[in-house]
Image (cartoon, rainbow, N blue to C red):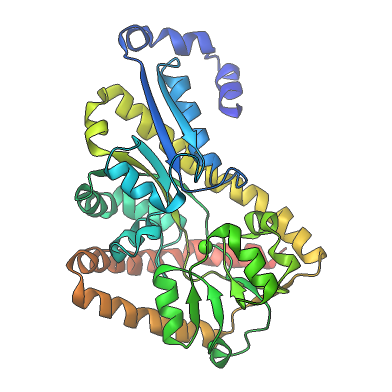
Length: 359
Ligand code: CA
């Protein structure tokens, strides 16, 4: 909407914009695709990303290319999105690749890995590093074309019924956390639990689990975790900038006209920026409301962060030793990240630290 009003003000009416594309509109085929999302409709941020993308595609093709978005469980269960796209049960999906860690931990690089890249650095790796190329080769083995379509930014470290004062407090901690992060925490004695989003609240309320992580203030508040756990820790070191991806069956992708492929890529890029912007705009209010409701914010102690970092490096060495796909991507990712952090600590980091201290 804002972009449109800008275009109008700048002297480009919508009529002028549409007049430039009658060739596409007249000759373009009608395409109707189904998209299976791994997310529930209640999470307007992350589920909404697919709707933003689909709307942009329809707008840019004069309604000729329609993508219908289905929430998790409507036509495909959330964890089934990978296989549904691979097997062309649906043309498209919208998901987090690290959900498929069990198939191959290499998937995690398409979303986030513990102590990994932040959202901007992930974009840099994907677009101007080797990210797209390496992950594209990996996804091709499953007949999937993956396109970035959203990011949550750094997540929170989750909700805890008791304080985490030292590494010793992780011993025996039953925590809802998945994938690589679960592997890292289990090295320090924690007991990771895989629980779907909808089941976290009752498990935390009953004390079946001691802690749970989800996303950040805006999404977490919706799920009501502040009512069943008092301590809200930060940062979520396992998700420094988790990327959400659109999956497209590679055969269906190849069948699309080149113009539709380009429009779909542009729509994903627009939804990608929009999701991050929405989280950044919504999280401060939610954080203030959580604080006002009695939530106690706590940073993870330095020794906990250091121990988790060390354990993560061990996990990377172990997986690299037995998984060639993982090693190939990790070696490139790690090298890219070292340079990113060298650069980010100079201007970005010092500017951010100064500005945040003025608040
Ligand atoms: Ca999370």
